[in-house]
Image (tube, rainbow, N blue to C red; front, side, top):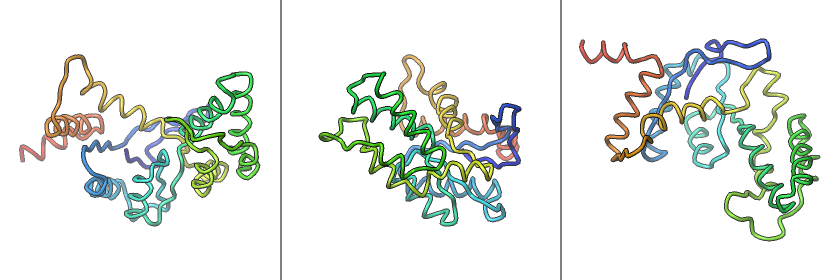
Length: 214
């Protein structure tokens, strides 16, 4: 999903509403996806904007894709994915005891959100053994993303630090249309429907109709 800062409205409580954005659903390889991402970014003003910000969940393929097509971009690790991983790690380390893992997780999160990443790292105990599925090696995860978690600095510049909008987009674009009871899809059919759905939700449907009938 691509949007510009001028297409946001800030609420009194500090939250933002994105009033204009473009969705890009794609089923295929990351290499082929690059073109769609870059095209959408150009339509949104890439090349003219002062800052290009990419918010992602820390996946290697996204990091590499963005480094390739947006070498000048500022990559931010989504705060909510980070919190999720911290809580999952805490549950595992403290054997699912909420009296221990909740205050520990909140302490680590508070340190990171305030910019004290090195202090947060000292609070993370080493894994006693190999982590089970769904639990990242938190110390390594944070150290590998150190340059992407300067949340005080990002917020001071007015940048988003969470990917809630794109998580909601997954429900709006994909789940509501493709994951209803009894539905079965092939790649070609699913991609066609997703593309049409994205045009509608991006406010581009009328423009596409004019293009098709011109």
